[in-house]
Image 1 (cartoon, rainbow, N blue to C red):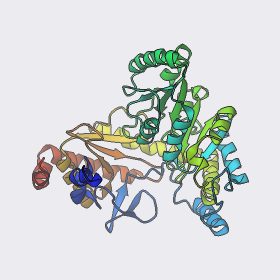
Image 2: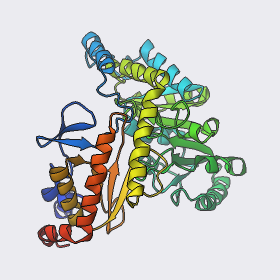
Image 3: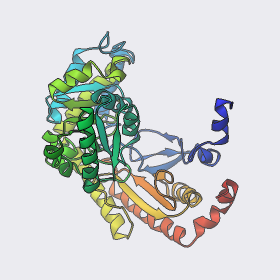
Image 4: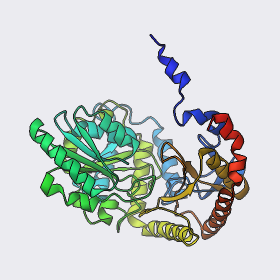
Amino acid sequence: MKDLFDRIIENKGPLGKWASQAEGYFVFPKLEGPISNRMKFQGKEVITWSINDYLGLANLPEVKKVDGDTAAEYGSAYPMGARMMSGHTEFHEQLERECAAFVNKESAYLLNFGYQGIMSAIDALVSKDDIIVYDVDCHACIIDGVRLHMGKRFTFKHNDIESLEVNLERAAKMAEQTGGGILVISEGVFGMRGQQGKLKEIVALKKKYKFRFLVDDAHGFGTLGETGAGAGQEQGIQDDIDVYFATFAKSMASIGAFLAADKEIIDYLKYNLRSQMFAKSLPMVYVKGALKRLDMLRTQPELKAKLWENVNALQNGLKEKGFDIGTTTSCVTPVYLNGSIPEAMALVKDLRENYGIFCSIVVYPVIPKGLILLRMIPTATHTMEDITETLTAFSAIRERLENGTYKRLSAAVAAAMGE
């Protein structure tokens, strides 16, 4: 019999094998200073395109005052315990009411952390007799939630309605045999490539296949729709989303999340959502902070307007310079280049050290081999100067990638890793 740790020691995983070359720089980097369009990386100022602070709320004085005053009044522990036992307050209820109203749903339930919350929601919504059908590109939190499911599940090709319908037909036949129902899961905005989910096309199939629809709108909440209520509002089908999920970790620049649905469904989740029943309540500093941030989303539309001014300037500038940004229909701005993982490392180091540009790098196994994805998150705090500098830098690094400069620089790394 093997020691359990033998496999772990021998195989670090597709990303872990790069740890000695990547850790502290390409992964687990340390960005320092106030959260903003420009921060410090290894002592140097860089333009930051990797912070999900879409509306620029994180460092606003009025937001920090509420956070600070609440921490001073309550500390970081209150309320103590799970909501069902001892962690419930009138402010939690107020935030739930306001979240529900903002996304045009009857009721809402707070989650102390988005990742575990949606995992637990999937687990609670389905039984072993039910069938899940979900987009293959769904976020890891959804994949992990689906893994908890004791029954059958099918994936459909990303944003492919024909593939969805094929799998719905399979699911419907199976549900007839098991006596169960069908849950379809998609995202409002797919956070890696920036495409909105085809929510309108999906809900058009509801009458034919009688499924329920769960949408993870982490990147759409606050950024899409007339009032910022998300991708469902943007596509005119918010009422047809049965269970709506959003996080406070992006547009609201905080921690926590919520689910919104009909009151009967939320009441069920309150008593069956294991991640909330058996975990500490969302601390008051985050609850009151979220109330302040949500009020700003409602009353200051200029924040979203400034965000989209920057998004359009960046995305249009990249397209005018011939960059491939895929088919993004959101703020998420991917830039696709061709190259190996060692070339990607050399490129990103050049971008950070010589041009002062910090953006996330995505490589295999998240995307296919031979591709490099530079993922950019424009925010309301960015300036036209930031965008101009970035476009100039990207033109330079593309030229070096194409003329083989990064391939030569990365040869030693590739040899060391046996690539």
